Length: 230
Ligand code: BTN
Image (cartoon, rainbow, N blue to C red; front, top):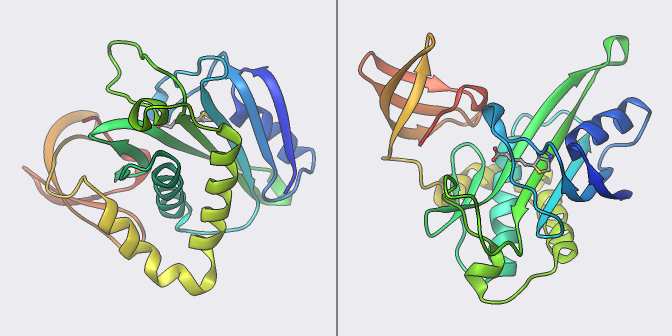
């Protein structure tokens, strides 16, 4: 699959969205050494120091409802293979090692009017960073395995895993793999309901990837766009 590399961009998601509009095909990848406006879910910034992380975006032009689930499983498998350490999933698609965040996924959907829609799947992985801003509870593959890792190897591993777990024959096992690796179940989380924050306990993951939570107002289900803190 095609890949376009940049030294510095605002956000690889922005570049990939522009390329998708101009006709770049499904699966095309944009990779950058650094981002000056890398972003995460819910308006967070994504720490993107030069050369120290994998910052990539993949153009998605095919419908796949479980894409966020597949991305999380593929990314945790790829991080685990390269680090040699077990990597877990924090709902919806953060990847953690020893309770610290090592990678995240930002899926953005775009409409192109008459020509339908497409999505951009942005993947950020802390590969060789050795220190992080104090407010982040983060780690990197290098810190966990004790030596630097190859970003390009990780990119290829991730794409291979994504293809494998999204394959028609494997889809029934996808949610099982996700639930096995998901450390959010049973955890207390803070959610937003009607612009107010409230404490909830995560009970499980539905077959469409939504999170079931117990709140003081009863059971609710959350989509990834309505997720939370903690
Ligand atoms: C998150 O965990 O909040 C998602 C982080 C996603 C970061 C990646 S880095 C490559 C791509 N470009 C961005 O601006 N964000 C994603």
